[in-house]
Length: 607
Ligand code: M6R
Image (cartoon, rainbow, N blue to C red; front, side, top):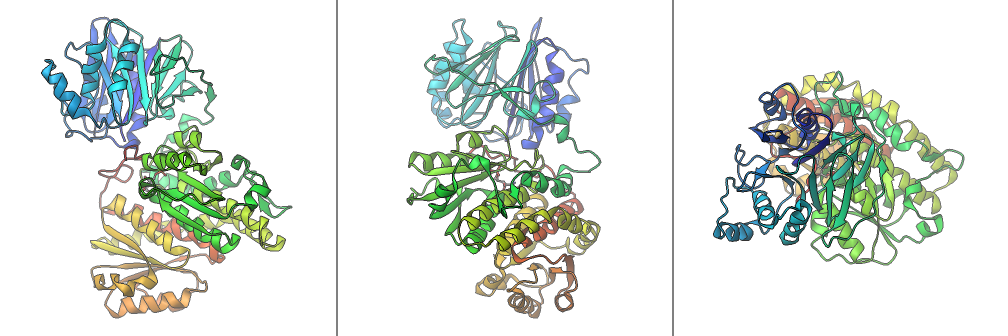
């Protein structure tokens, strides 16, 4: 999604804005622009393409006092310089950047045109600049406040006025805005990563809040001028962490990081002596957890797949009814809140609009909702009744990889806690703890298959469509593998239960549609082998992810990727990693933009 950065302080603004935009680019960017206040007035530079394209036309010597910048991911209007933010009012004195969607923009635009305003872009954002122009009478904050009252939709907005050097004002409704407090300098951005090289002191704005900043102070109030008392929070990660290091892409780096990120997700959360787990953030006693009669996990995309795996695990090990629901569907279906049900919303970014709105709807109905998030201080993390940070570190590639396995770690530990409170014995709990502790080594072994997978994809890069097939708990990993492949290689792919193939998808099988089967050595192995044979008979090519030494499958399949043998419920980790590598190398082979695939953004804050 689009990204915002604003700066006022003692340093020349242009360099800081460009640096911030670079860090926002991962969210999806098809054009970028800056507006910088100088002694001679606004200097606005815009460019379609990536931030590097903008950087190429901005003077190398940093300049300006204050400024705002925006990386745009087009929603209203094509990818053109006219549609690139910042947008100006008729006088050219008010500049605006905006994330989100103004739903009633066309009605407002019509009225503004009748009043004589002249528009230069097709964006919804431009109306904000013209509304502020109408309301402005020397107080920019008040003008934005009056404007915000008229807007329907989602927004994070930052505004500057040519007559007010070193003042920025912002407003938030449904799209994040964060204040960074430095030494005689202030930052305001949609993403905390943009400011962590300068300050770790931040304030998160809530919906319905307006902020005014100067280099020395800030003031936050609501739309009715009531001052808000805000807590200054400390961000505890370094911005260096979002560098690619020796890796060609963030996605590959993040795939490799999983051997460490799963450890971070477990740190201090496994109790070997009691053979159970501990998740302090749940804010629930064991007695309260024992009263839970159902668990419902709500999420989107990859996080939803993690939820599906976890629901299966919760039913299997903790013997508690559990399900996963798509946030986008749940928020509109008037969900029934069962007494003693516990909800989890799972989100890497903590800003996904569908998940956030599902959370709010559930809370409005009185449900207890916990969060599983990666982004610290994100809106979902703040609005849930408690929850768990997965600590996988910033995930930059649009395709989610390490967040998936870290979400699983958190949900596996939750399952262990629930199971141990119920029927799981000490011995079984101890064994489960041991298996979780063994994850880094297992992931490391799977990563050794990287080169093999890289070679294998060349053989299959002809395919226009893929089936990903698994059973039991790995069915959901097959869905995740298909999502990974389609989003970054643009090859059509679907994940099915291998058993369901004969109920329809088998009609797709021919020499040109390969199937990728997940074949663990568990109780469903023989069933899967039958499914493979059915595909082979119909001339379908088969790649099987199999356990080392499984010669029977190796003989039937056209190609195999071998993985270590683990216990049944650990397979989702073991199976997910080769599928991530498969998608990565396929995208590379096809020359795709791996980290920023077309049409996608890292955090879907509209919905
Ligand atoms: O930030 P979230 O976990 O809430 O994001 C949910 C999905 O948008 C996300 O997982 C998406 O499907 C990824 N691009 C998948 O790789």
